[in-house]
Image 1 (tube, rainbow, N blue to C red):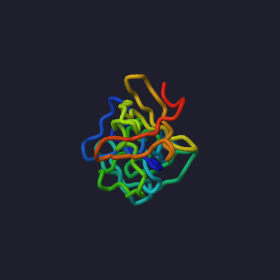
Image 2 (image 1 turned 135 degrees about the vertical axis):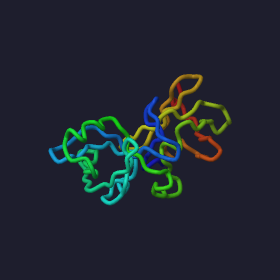
Image 3 (image 1 turned 60 degrees about the vertical axis):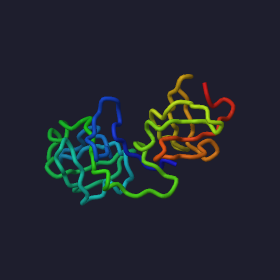
Image 4 (image 1 turned 90 degrees about the vertical axis):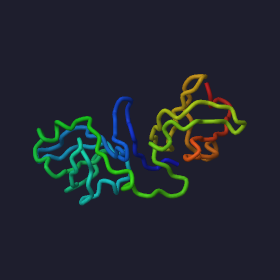
Length: 179
């Protein structure tokens, strides 16, 4: 359902300028040639060599990219030493929203789901999506509402409709799902 992800504001307090989307977060410098280890928040093709990302307001070309233990090792133009890369620890790589790859029907970027209201098929307001967790079997919506926090598996049997434009996700409430 949310096969790939991006985030407008991946953590409370982190700001991404309007019109841009965070596609990765710098974890640490890697090696001696200026590579940085990046937590991906977007589809893998976002990190293809030749593409550009914005880092602290500067547009940088991806010179090389390779996967490494669930992350990507990127060599960005202008970052040539571990010290150069180290100053970006925790920073977000961003791209203009219009540059994001189109997803298949029924797939959504995570940032589009954050803040959507969640209602039951009976119309009961349950809260809103505060976070989307990526798990091996399926994504999980963290829904915060008046009854507390609920973890809702993002699977077809539970999630009946996602209306991004209408700002609502409709779910089937099954026994044991809610607190």
